[in-house]
Image 1 (cartoon, rainbow, N blue to C red):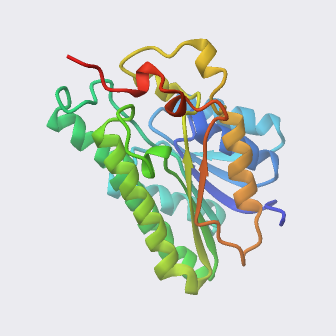
Image 2 (cartoon, rainbow, N blue to C red; image 1 turned 180 degrees about the horizontal axis):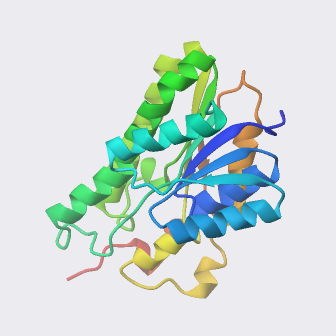
Length: 256
């Protein structure tokens, strides 16, 4: 394991959930952070928590679906730090009305724009920098839905996360020669604010048994701390009590 102290890490989706947990874990380990997300007030909360851990964070609000805005944020990070060693891409959304009979074209486009195109914009923006450095790590927070098609996540989110997984592996195929690595994290259910977008509320007894954000934060820090010669192409992780294995009603399509 290597120290990540002084490494420059850009975290998207850093205002809440897995992104915030990753930022706190990395910041607490001495990384220099740039935090992006749509809500500046949430980013400021994350930055304040990072500072309490002894770290420093630059706040850069961003909608990752806006390619031009992504480029501007990257320029700001380079101006402040001079390099980008690690990208943790955690920005993502879903919609409540996610089944085929309820999904609209507008909702489909928004989820694809954020979850898949956003991953492309951020990776595409940092790769030239990492090539010049001859080193870099991209950690894409994908999903269990990247590997397994299920009723629960809906066709749009599932398609976007399958695309993110393919995108991640393609980076390793093309960019490994430059010392660049990409890891796709594929977690099952995680107790994040994204659960609020579920069609049905999730009982607390279920969320308590899910993967917690801090668990994912520790995993992100672990991946970031691996030696440069090691590429964790993909990490598939689930709760021990996996609702999809238990045949929970929420994971199964309803009958008419």
